[in-house]
Structure formats: C-alpha cells, structure tokens
Image: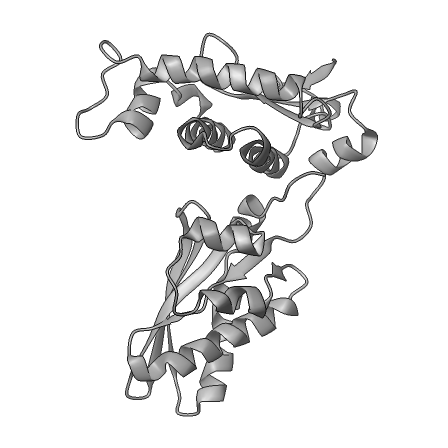
Length: 277
C-alpha cells in the first residue's frame, strides 16, 4: 500500500498539496469510521474526533496527554497523567482499531486517518493506489451540505402555529438555495411535539447540521433565537433576530429570509461533509 503523507513541510510545493485530503474529506472519513469501525465505541470515537478536530484547527502541537485527559477524562477530579493512564491506554486501543479497520473494511478507503506512535497528533493521507474517482472525490469540494431544520419551538402556547409556519418557510427558502440541501418536511415535522437528541435528528435526516430555535412575540415584535449545531451538540453559530409586523405570513417569510441570509456559509462548508462512496 502506497500512501501520500498529508502533513507536508512548510516549503512543500503545489504538487504535494494535490495529494493531501481536504479538511472536508477528513471529516467525511470520520463519519465513515463512526459508521463502520466505532459502532458501540462512543468514548473511543470521541477521542478520535477530538484529536482530529484539534489538528484540523491548527492545534496539533498542543495535543499532549494532559490536554486530552482533561478534555475527555477529567470528570470531577482533574486528570493527572502521573497516576492515571487512561489516555495512553485509549490511544493504544485507538491505533489498533484504526489498523484493523484499514486492513479490512477500509482497505479501499481513499482517506487514511492514523495516530502515529510517540504522540497523539493524527496524520491524514490519501491512498495513492485507491480508485481515481475516490481520490478525486476526497480531494475535491463536496456537494452542498445537508441541513436539517427542526420545527422551531414556540415559547407561548398560542404561537405554535406561527412557529411551524416559520419552519416551513425556512425549508421552502433553503430548497431554492443552490448552496444548500435541506431535509424533507415529512422527516423534520415528525420531531414536532416529541423528545429527541440532535444525533437522532441528524441520523434521520442524513445530516451533520441541525438548525433550531425558539420564537416568542411581544405585541408587534416577533423574536427568534436561532442556533446551528453539529449532531454532537456543538453550537457552530447563533443569532437573535427581531421582526416587526402584524401579518403572520409576511413576518414568517421575512424571518426565514433573515435567518438564511445570516447563516454563515463557512460553518456550513466546514461541517457539511458527507461520506465518500
């Protein structure tokens, strides 16, 4: 198996860059690993996600045992690497699990994620002997991200219909935005009046991005507090928008337009990666 190292030296040329997976491709590979290698291993997958995201954000040099221990295993008592070996043990388990996956189900995957021994910073590679189409897909820009729009929550019981209308308008507008894909109404409105986790919503919608919020009215002012979250509950963006008006249809349309207009496209591009087939 021949692979191209993704961590190129500072003076690497443009040719080297072409053989490295994009951050979007690495995140897509994380999802593939979650589905095919880490079922039932949530804590180990959380370890992998943490070190990968830190590396992608340019903080690979800070990935020390203490940092990982405090982040993932701190709990009530601070993590102390002198008396606690959890990080070292889990890192060994993680390396073994990745090795087993890439020797078996992932032997044809274009993107290879590994944790080299001697440290905790991950390494990302493109497999040079993978099918050309897979390598091109891993290095290219991905299709528009899938957005799951949860039914917005009315903070006043008599505003439930208004909140449902805002949700419907957001989905309608997003369907017509070439930069987005949006989960179908039939999928999203089944979560109305029900308990759920963001991970459940994302799984049903086939998305890593969930848009949700609350709505309340004070006289002629309609206020929406909106958040864009990852499936694991990380808030990627939030905002508060006030719309003044009397006609429900007009206010719903204006509110939906304002939300989509303010939605940060960078957050969508960074988190909207899908599995590489």
